[in-house]
Image (tube, rainbow, N blue to C red; front, side):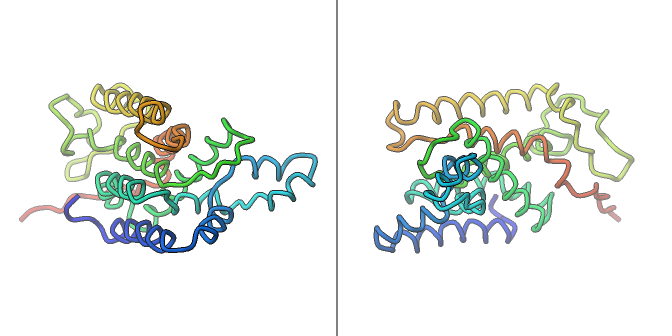
Length: 242
């Protein structure tokens, strides 16, 4: 995490930069920014509702907001917390995927989080903002390989059946194999539990003034787990030492 790939640094700088600029704007301009780029589930629902006049009242679907919402944040604490999660889980994923696939993965998990939020709150017009769903996807992607042989969290369990030919990196286990590994299961269970407690109960616990879209986090995490093989680069042969 102390030697982050440039793409992770650039993404974090972009998130912080966007919030810094937005926070300096007038309140009216900030509201206009939210209306244009924050994701509102009800707006998407009304755009596909049989009564098209209702959709017109809300300005249409604004499908780009399925992604752009992840670039906006509501406070310095909000953007910094999401940046910290990117610092923690972004580097290993970026090194494995490469810059382009890393950004595509970020976008995909952000969109998946928005769609999950929409599925549960189809008529909600509250603006959804923040990179938390994409951060959750990064955590899920990391879980697919950080427990394997040679990784810092591999432990001592026997995972020799996951090794490839001599000199190559260990292959990533299938999702079924991953879910039979104790460390991976504990990681996923703890993540789900804390996401529910601090997400669903954030306002009750006084941790947040606004509702936390924890379903979007779950959507991003599940999408990250399932779609990981689509973004993973072919196995690379380890360099041979002289």
